[in-house]
Image 1 (cartoon, one colour):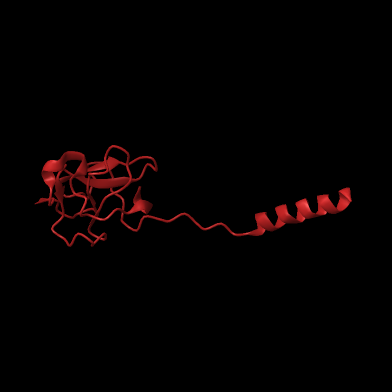
Image 2 (cartoon, rainbow, N blue to C red):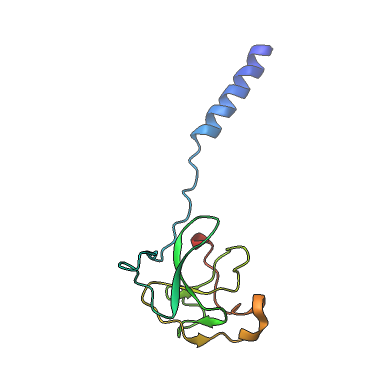
Length: 120
């Protein structure tokens, strides 16, 4: 009886380890380079290190977004960066000079721009 229980536990563990895990989502937006000689962020943005993943993205000033449709996350997006949930990020080279719909709401501003969790 002990042998059959051990066999069930072993085979269950073997099957669990054989199950492929989903690869983590990769951010589809090009990262920026904070080196001034290589930085491609538009002058209206800054290249910052986002947390918790340590990716580098071009950050708009608080209350600003790109002149693009709110759903166009290829141009601008928000992340799950704690304390910066209101911050809009853009791909390198994109100008960030359009006020968000409710720019005056501080931490609740720019909620119209979609979140890209894979870039968080």
